Length: 351
Image (cartoon, rainbow, N blue to C red; front, side):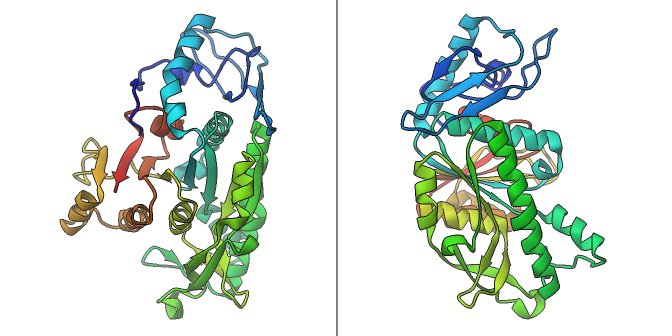
């Protein structure tokens, strides 16, 4: 969700063609995409390369002939320009999880969005958890997942599996997908470069190795971001003794956004956003400030699993992040909707 001089509506053909520019066009900061559908034809997936160099050039190739007239493509790119100018060179921290992680089609949509945004000059930092994958591997090893108030109970055996799955499997899979799509991703965890230092949670006697974030040191991230790489960060951290902890991915994303002075924090979720009436999906609150969101919590309108997400957003805003958004990860290309339109894909919270 972004204010811009020129309004780009959801009905705009941007989302039919911005993802699919002229295959012969070469630009210093151009884009990527996956699939474009017209009334009668559908193109096949694109092959995209986003090269990191001093000129930050992007070379785009396509296996099929374009189906949209060139003049239409040019007009649509010009419509997107104010939004690209607003965020170009700014750091955007995205927390990835929920339905967007479970569905292959939504995963492909998120990856395509990341690559497009990176290629037009946004500095993307990608933070992930991996609950479903952890549960799968616990089951394969004959271990039953246990939760307390929505948090995973993490004993020593579970922590070992969490580290192996998040850092060794999920993280490298996401890095591979982003690299294949044409950007350059680098996989990290909170342990690398002492990016995140953990401390035991107040309920450690019940939760085990579930940690809070004591400190953030983004030094290892800065050269990657400046070189137009996409850091992909697994939400695992260690305390000063080297003991690993499972960290809530929303919390990790919020603290990283604050430490990096990010322009925007985006949490991909399984809901439309913050609802005025929890039983009415049509009551989406498009934009709200900290004062308003705190009142909604006091009134009981925000409850359950939405509370820690909202608290994460509020805390990041209090530490200097410009805006935080909770968006519907079930929507295809929700990241583009949030960043390149004025309507957004969920709820934007401002300071």
